[in-house]
Every structure is written in C-alpha cells, then in structure tokens.
Length: 58
Image (cartoon, rainbow, N blue to C red):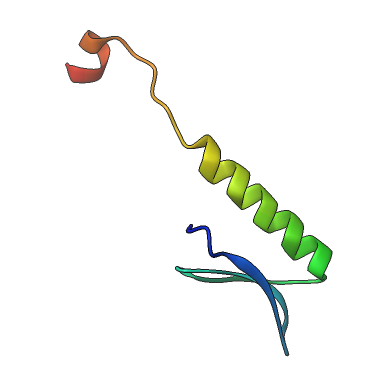
C-alpha cells in the first residue's frame, strides 16, 4: 500500500482506495477510516523472521 491511500465515497458506499484498487464497501466513513488506519499500522509493522543462520539457510 502506498502512502496515497485514501477514503472515498461512491454510490455503493465507503471504500479505501489504494494503488492496488479499492477495499470495501464499508458502512460508514468512520469504518473506512479505521480500516485505513489499521492498514497503515500493518504496513509500518512489516514482518520479521527470527532465526539463526543455520535455521534460515539450511
């Protein structure tokens, strides 16, 4: 998700629009904003693998 993600309203409801497309519809602007916030937190958290060199490369 890029930083240009935003909340948009269409005739079908509220969506989170990202460079990969739209997520939704959602029931309210508040719900869409909450979802966008959680997406940004998940992106910032990323993922990490913790292992020894032997475990990761064997």
